[in-house]
Image 1 (cartoon, rainbow, N blue to C red):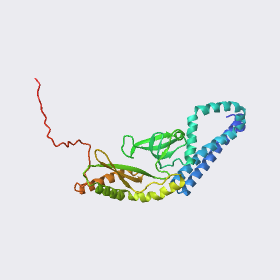
Image 2 (tube, rainbow, N blue to C red):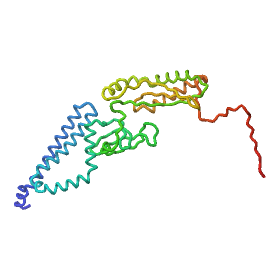
Image 3 (cartoon, rainbow, N blue to C red):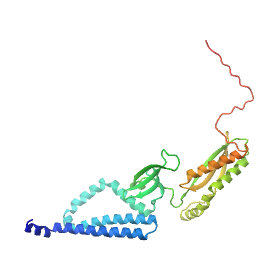
Image 4 (spheres, rainbow, N blue to C red):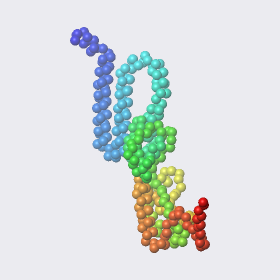
Length: 302
């Protein structure tokens, strides 16, 4: 290569700036990697460690942009008006992206939810497995699967939805839910005995959840303006024209609803079998109660 050309390349300001940019990027990347590894080593809480690494990654890319803008500032200064007009157009075209980034900032610092929480966001319900700058990744539950069980789909939801729709968090300040199951009992059954049996079963199956949730509920009452609610399982009765309906209301961990209902139904059916017909489950089948004989006549037309 010609010696004059080599000298021209060495002393060319653009080449010098590109070299400085590459060196700066390498230094910033090394610092970012070092801080990320240090955070992973010294931050024990998994959620805090995850959020710290995400923030460090974002700051690293932001530092790249600042470095490039600083190095080429003399050229950019001549294009201020053009960049201003282009920026306005880009902001309009990328408003959804900007809203998603704003949503990520709100999620990260506003306490909407964290990785591991069970949420409903953008019409999708499931467990949060990743929070990105633009999208939140959710392991979906429900849909064609009955109960709060995974269906196998991993869904990415735009962070901008936190500004458009309500965000339901099943596991934030109070990681418990109230739920109910109902049993129809025939008239003529020992309704007082049935009440005692169902109350015993409810306390036996759900009593531990009640004990675990009382401290969490006390903290919620202190934090928010909310009235007291009954934590212990309870049984209520409603009588109509068909049967006596017993409803068991209970509190349960947000991820244990299906398993707890399964236990309750099994225990109630066991008690019904042991009751010697003192408790008889009602059905919606029709029952003819008239004492008069019913005559049915069949005639054949010719």
